[in-house]
Length: 262
Image (cartoon, rainbow, N blue to C red; front, side, top):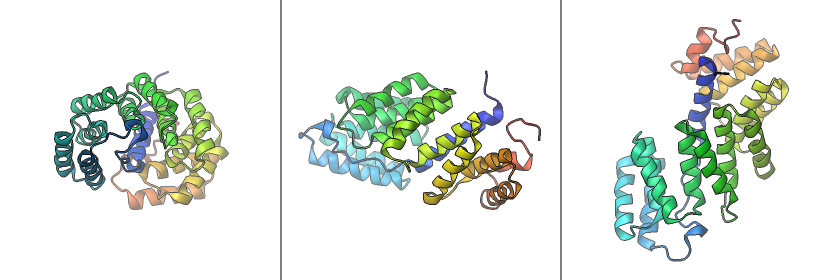
């Protein structure tokens, strides 16, 4: 069954929310790199990561050029280039750099995680899940819960709820409060008709994360299904007040609730 246009927008909202919640790029001293990392390449790659998180993409690119001039085989620099080019919507360049990072260090978990997430957002879910699985399998990976959460999101986007749930079970064993996983869990529970579970996941998320337009819209949809008109109105009022120009607000104003005609 093809996804409805409203549900497709819902998934796009999850993706945008996940990108906004993603942690800062990790250090360029991953255990997979061994002990022969150039100090200059490492420092300039870490500076690039800092500038990237600040939205200073041109400066990040400059730092990465310096890093690669110091060590043309520094995989984290190519990984960072992939992230920067993705943010700039230069997708061919992003893919080439992610691939180069993994070619240089085949078991580079952060590279597999970022490339897998990238592929999933390009609609190449099977390829993306393959790389996310590769990231998780590496016992040296310091944060497998991130790859697990990304894999759950990828499964949701693919429409494979069973696979998404499998990844969610695994991530919650490691990190019960993982934000992206909680957001995906709420969406999966909603689609499965487990409305109280959806509400619980959303409330748990709200305890630690400021709710954006996508999450507020999810709250509207959950509470509408539960029949709690006061809670639905509260989420809707926050959505209209804080995000008047968001696509979710437009859906709310036009009373488009997953095509249910209500």
